[in-house]
Image (cartoon, rainbow over all chains, first blue to last red; front, top):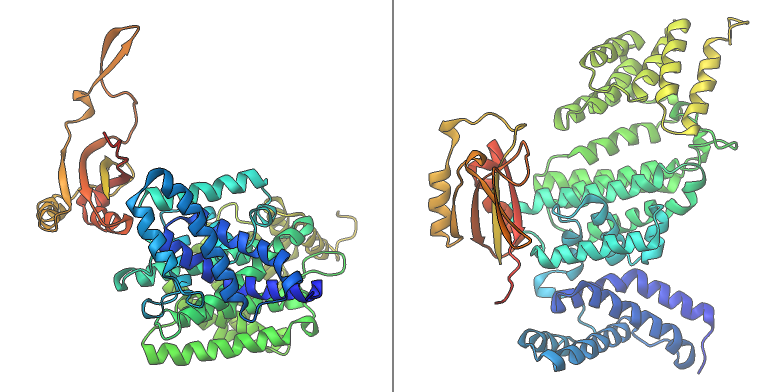
Length: 431
Length: 111
């Protein structure tokens, strides 16, 4: 029996999206060996690629893959165990042999994938390793795909992953869902990793954007998985808030730059190009997060508030009809919950929109005096924008120039140059 | 698993407040839990001596082998279930507040 290549490809892709992490997570639980688990699962998928076109796609692809990966692990451990006769390895073998093919995960003890995510995002690992390991082990990306997304060579990324797995083993990082006293901070840690992953993909500009785009997509996929795994937990509403935030940003991805690749601000974006489906899902998620948050007594954290802020923009018909007063209120709450100079700056902009540019300018000048955002280009950029709205063009021009000097990317510098030119429109001869 | 806690000074840490020093309670709790194997404070680096043997000769020098602003003020060898427990133990130590603590897993030589 032969099956079409496309059909096999589709079956393997589906299994890899749904099952790879589950099988890896279970093999890690039983063997405690991350590299072995990853290699065996990769081998199982490689076998499927050869086997399925000839013999047909098995009725239960997940069970087939689990069996092959399990047997591969048993073979590897047997040859090692026969040399060392290590008692530990023998007990691992017993655990593997007892693993039913359709039993990925231990239902009584929660999903193994949740253990895997918490362990990959353990705070004792360097942040970049947490992101890489989550992409490798939970999302199932290959080392070369991750290396490409982070613009490093494959050996460099491979070393980073090897070091991370070694630290998990040698420093005794536990493979588990953390106990109640740690669950809140550790879940916040996972969300931070996912948001970083998303931003790495989302904010990539120019030639890098193609290589890095998968990061945003994987962050959204992993966040969906996390929400499913956290069902019933008080941590779930905040994870939903983060997904809503990502989807709001994601929904604007086509409108963020114009045909020439230049940045377009929120105010000037063509709202017809916003992704309605993503926006609708994000709005529904936020509402569900609020309902569940109330039911479980968990107050909105910073992701839910940031998502509500993004939602204010995404659901407004046009820029003018944005609920600016509500926006300013949400920024107030965010500033109380997670005070930072950047949050203060955003609050100043929201206040400017709801109470007038003067009120916002006041806050920005106060922030300037603290010198906490020195060197951050968005401070002079925001100030310039308010000065421009007040018609104070020479001052606005000065601030746009400062912002342009500090801007991190070519796209941002081009945008600021354009704005700078506008401040001089009435002064021919000055360039 | 055994870990060694290096209890270090940190010039950027908040100033030491004797009233907030709970080392006696910490030691009592960790003893009661069977965590601490051995631990104590160390004399300052002024009392340190560095020894090397080069070409068969013992060379003795005054002072620590590295001049740093941070130095090891004490140590504890602890037995914990995993790194999370070691982090919890370290975070309760008063010097986590007034200095910093480095956790290093013991790497048994198996002799």
